[in-house]
Length: 234
Ligand SMILES: [Cu+2]
Image 1: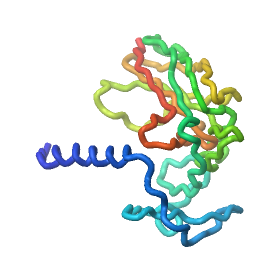
Image 2: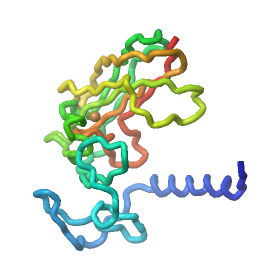
Image 3: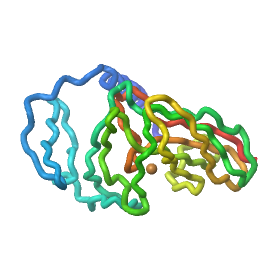
Image 4: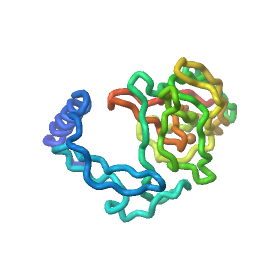
């Protein structure tokens, strides 16, 4: 393996600079109102104003990407998603999630049951991904200013635990959209299919908006509505 002392130094500096930028607080207000507008379905909006000094790669598929447009159906090949991000909640209203109970060990093939608490996530919105609802709609807050969506639970073996894993799809998976959830934290019990085999495993729970994206937050240093546990399958 090639070793570069320069990289060793530069990388932490770059991270520090990035962290400083992320943590510096609210970005300066964007400049004067924007330039071009264009139609997207029946909504007319104005293109984002690019803050001074930030040279973006683009913020639309149109004119910036040669990939096929995403059509709401999950695709194993690259696509460009032209669904807008939509609305994020106030800082205090951002969704949050915690696994509050999980087994430390299960038997091979034994169902895995977790207790999951969510806050500021109204679990009432789910566009079926298999029916073309993946990445299909923007996020829109409900009347109380909260994100509508659901959460996902999945478990997998993690091998030695020393390398990031291939991004496989998981058979041990469940989406929870039970109509509950809101400003006050509440707890849901979720059971996903067991893992067959032995070894170290991981169960992850993460929120999704109506079309399955992890909900956005006001600030980069707010932790998204995600939690994970390790467990042993024996
Ligand atoms: Cu989902």
